[in-house]
Amino acid sequence: MTKPVVELFARKDCSLCNLPGCTLCREASDVMRRTLEEMSFVCKEIDIDSSEDLARRFKGDIPTVFLNGKKVFKFKVEEAEFKKKVRNEIIKAGISRLRNKRSS
Image (tube, rainbow, N blue to C red):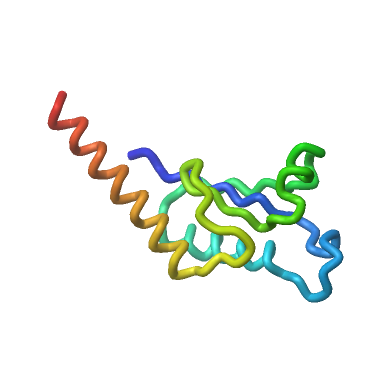
């Protein structure tokens, strides 16, 4: 089965945002880790400060989460909604796999 791919574009160092008390990137990463303990998906955490292009693209929009290439969250990642979206992608992949087997 193909696993869903989740990409988190965030900062590794929250202090670089210059927003007092902001922990949104860390919170998003924690949600992904907890969900990964329950479900199987590919998790990629991308530090936007690793390239000028990423820093320019996501500077004011972090954290941003993509699921199978579609933007699903920006700023606050709601854990229950995140789990629901990942679960739906897992189900879609399973249905697709079954259809492919039947048509073979």
